Image 1: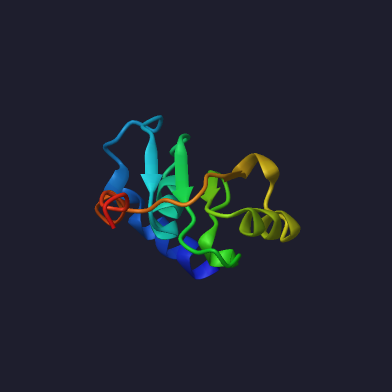
Image 2: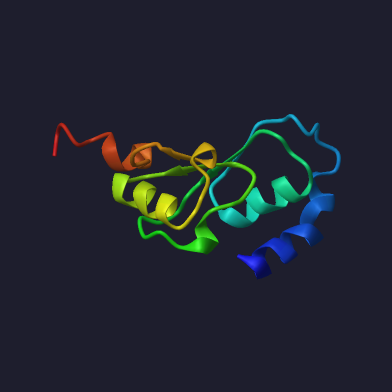
Length: 102
């Protein structure tokens, strides 16, 4: 997490022309870390794994997790409850569109 956060600081200029209240949904923690480092106030991080690991969460934003066990494990790890929310699984539409026929 520390190395990713240090890298994110160097990427801040990529976002400098966007308003800081622009909603930003990140599918990778490095994008969310960059947005938080740049001062964005409405950042959502889609946690990429169902195994609680520090490098998957981003301090200072809302981290959406896919499963209840992952949610509980992040709470046990000390992630503040106001920065964590259970969202359920996200699956690409192309994968699920034909489930009724399959």
